[in-house]
Amino acid sequence: MAPPPAPAPAPGPLPPPPLAESPLVGPKIDVTVPEPAPPIVRKMHHHDGFYLRVSAGAGYRGASVSSDSAAHSDYSLNGAGISLDLLVGGTPSPGLAIGGALTLESVSDGDVDVDGAPNVSSGSGGLLLVGAFIDGFPMANRGFHLGALAGLAGGGFQRKGEDEEFSGGGLGGAVWIGHGFWVAPDWTLGFDLKVDGAAMRDNSGDADQGSSMYGLSLLFSALYH
Image 1 (cartoon, rainbow, N blue to C red):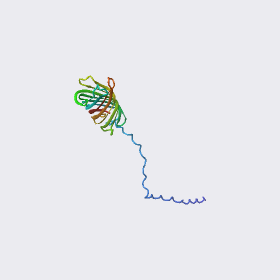
Image 2 (image 1 turned 180 degrees about the vertical axis):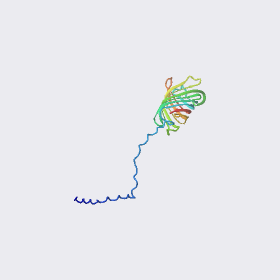
Image 3 (image 1 turned 120 degrees about the vertical axis):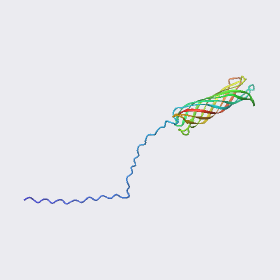
Image 4 (image 1 turned 30 degrees about the horizontal axis):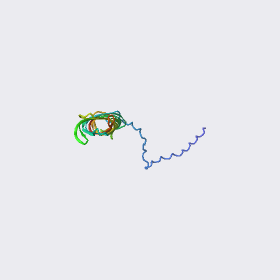
């Protein structure tokens, strides 16, 4: 006869039931941060890059000429004239331009006062400034701006009917405030109010002469920037 079958092994202990999720544990939060997108560089209606300003207008200016010789009368010249500006530069920082400037101021048929006597005759003259400028836009995408220049000055004045003529050089500068309106992606048209001045000397003649000139101009301005 066959032997009886072996008894079946006793069942092992049952696994513990899963623990219930605590109500104090909230869902997990994903704290990963995606990579930021590259910044958008604005090119239209933004003051950056190459800078070119051409301005023209009219103004009123005065000049005085004095001499260390009694043989030469002191006189002053006051009148209206034209004003022309050419500024070329670049933008080291958005909204801030620097570069070189060339300005021309003139007086045409102005009144001449000699030794304090008013309107003795008439005269004309001009002033040339060559130097460095800075022009700043507080908001790089707007047209309001403030600027200044400083450099070398050259000027000449002539009284009508007189052989005496002042022609000298020295130092000068200007400051301005203005606003431009966008008319194209890189062009603005607007107006500037400028104050300029210079101090010069003329040692070419038989007397040492000194001159100072100042003026106020309103300019129409075209800017590529």
